[in-house]
Length: 392
Image (cartoon, rainbow, N blue to C red; front, side, top):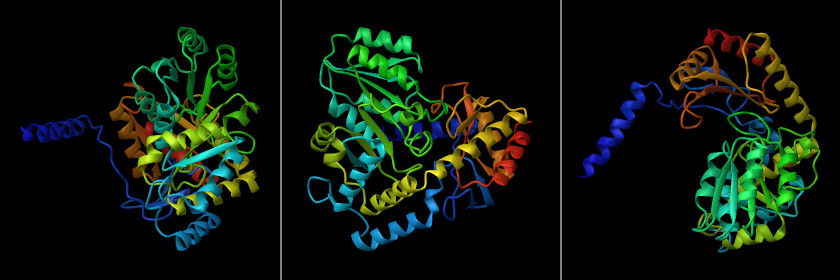
């Protein structure tokens, strides 16, 4: 009976409420910044935003979006191969390829779409995709969506012995695709890319890296994981987003060889069956990438603020998870405790989210702090004081 369906939904919601693990949605009443206006809370320090470089409200970026909105209208109104390809898509994709140090790129409406588009489109029966166990859910879904006959394997997080074992097991596969996050979104740590590339060369594998939390954040000039390690080659495919450091508005991409990008344009389902990225979002991403290329000092500023925050956290007797990105997680334990502490912080003027299962493993809930260059040092001082009080 239909009523069984609705009863099950109601029971699930009541269970979440009883366990105190229900997610609460905050309504922001202005632009994203180091401090933002939140309904019922007023000006609040934001420590959970992907706005790593403060591009969301930068005048040059906003003005570029307004100009594109006036020129191109609200949206693309079609998929790419019909009438959804605008000249500004080409401009964005050429600039993205240059920024990533790749031959070409193709844009999607999100990095989720890019990951779920590319992995199934590039693999054929008999191939093997090998994924880090802590990869983003979009990579996991991309691996799940491969055709029947494509082998799937998962290696322990950043464990190169386990990755090698999976490569050996896949020795007969025509194509072996290793997929990893560059910066792991819930851990804040960085993939051991030199070792991954070395194993890929040894076993003839293709390497794909999701740079969503790395682009604009790590590397001397914010070009991501390859630059962080001083690597210029060895990564075949880069996926990423324009919705975090590179503008914050939305959109994703694949950067790779011309052949890879052309196959994705011809075969990947989100490219064939979903509207293209709105031109206004293309303009915002272009302005953000160009601003970053022209002003690499903002990456240095972000790094200095992140190091300051991490040291202050440690000096206050707290123990952050190890990492070298702008993500600083604090392990809590139970999901209910993480949500409770997050609410105490919110009541005192600091917005950071308590993450629990299924976003992170059961018993490994955490408060994830994300540092933005839009934060003032006084904001960081205030926030760490509040966090310590909330955790006591």
